[in-house]
Length: 263
Image (tube, rainbow, N blue to C red; front, side, top):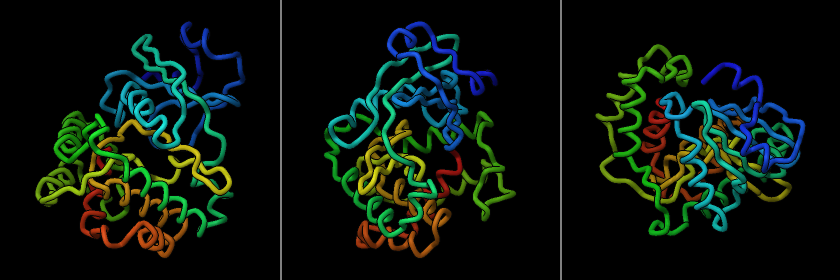
């Protein structure tokens, strides 16, 4: 992706025709790697097309947003375009603050309750209606591609894995792969910045390009880790209690944290 695509938003003509003139603010929070811009009413994401650097394509995100519409709260897709080797995805802006915002973290008990409820509701969606397979065979194949392409940022590994290589992480994933998957419709990147909180509700799930049928621990592991980092381990454990300890496997939490290192 050209460096200036992150610095300046230049909309292709089809998007200029459907989006009103606005002052666009660059969004810096998030780890998706895409350039993200927002106005008062809309959000535009920009990233290189067909680039393994990105965990998912914007076309994949568009498809998942359309599937989720009417099922769980997500932004509405406004337009999708490809021009000059770049993908552009325009969508409505969900009102509220992301769950990692200090004003949201100021009410930790409310936040962990909201997150547990949001994931329970998401994970209760019927599997037969979800067309996206993100189970371990798919996720591990994608991880292998990213490792082989050399796009995994080893410097961003969690503290306990600093100094390791992407190859060693992948080999551990292959060696310790769980025998069974507890499949649900999963978000795929369920860290705090990807939940939009508006008062007493979570009004939006965002960055859903990796959503699909996967083990519930793919979500639980990332939300649990994100709460531990943004609040403390006690609130992370409270989240698991509220979600339902009877379905939580600590070994799977560790496995899916390990898998996330390669995305």
